[in-house]
Length: 385
Ligand SMILES: Cc1cc2nc3c(=O)[nH]c(=O)nc-3n(C[C@H](O)[C@H](O)[C@H](O)COP(=O)(O)OP(=O)(O)OC[C@H]3O[C@@H](n4cnc5c(N)ncnc54)[C@H](O)[C@@H]3O)c2cc1C
Image 1: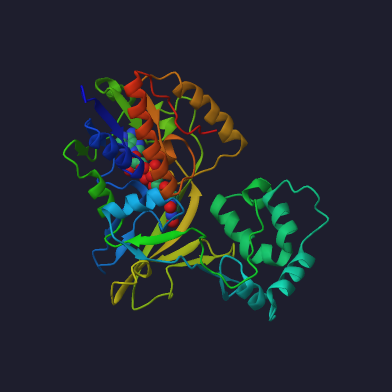
Image 2: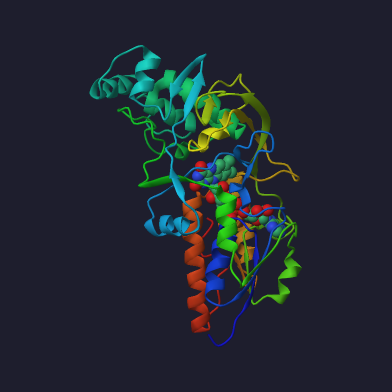
């Protein structure tokens, strides 16, 4: 290579780490800054000091993908242990299996249906009078009827999004959210697993390259981009512009930690469907590492609320108002030179880890191709709108 660029990367989460590694391997000098004191962004894991259990600090993360290149990529840096995500929910004082499946239906209605019988039964429950559902509630009533909607969707959705399902668009529930068999594996993907030593160890290994420098506890501001040939920014899009056009709406999470001697709930994730229970779920972290043995247990009760200026942004809200605001930020971003906005915060989208890695690999490849052609990089490789 004729010369090497000095590349700035904001954020040491999966987006920043994967782009950084690819450019470092291509011979560029990469500096990665993160405001936090650790790498791995929101999939950060660490051992709980009291119990020794590996904890998913910002909420439960299960790796699942159909993308063979991404699966091979993560396996380059970490051994993945087999893991199947099986979620339970407590509703009306009983425990059911999720996603709503034949077991859930039979238990809930006190029946012993076979698949065809259950399908016909649910179809009879569905509210056919709703011809053109506009809201989440109408869509759910039309798909599954009132009883299942109220037990499994209404309260949880209301707690998660902080508004009534009558205020959310029907598009959130695109397909019939029910299975007419006993498959309780949450994901359909070909590959699923858990990194043996946690996500932070995996990301630290991705970053372990002679051309990569990581600076933690270092916040990037727009003016800091000047010394770099190019900046890849995986922080919040509105934050880059100092929130000049207002704050994009997010939900944030609060975690209430507690410990237990033994096995608290018998599974990793227990949802709470009733609105009267203020938390959405309890995560018992040791069940994410079934190959380890721990006497003690650490659990997080998870509460969802509106994200304030000093909170961690988790889920982008992306309703009509936010999308209009997003369009204004996108227009501004497209005026910037030598900056590409990436990842879940830079593009204001919910992204699973596998898609984050896929997009990061594609972004790095595009940079190298454009550079070879002497062409500029776009502000967005993935359009946020
Ligand atoms: C509760 C929850 C559960 C999830 N569960 C799953 C799951 O089960 N499976 C799955 O595949 N995906 C899951 N995800 C998605 C996963 O977290 C994301 O795919 C992943 O974190 C995206 O990586 P990223 O690098 O784009 O963003 P992040 O991980 O958010 O990293 C961005 C980094 O940028 C840093 N930063 C921001 N602004 C600045 C600044 N100005 N200066 C310096 N640093 C800055 C931040 O500190 C952060 O470390 C979940 C997400 C949430 C919120």
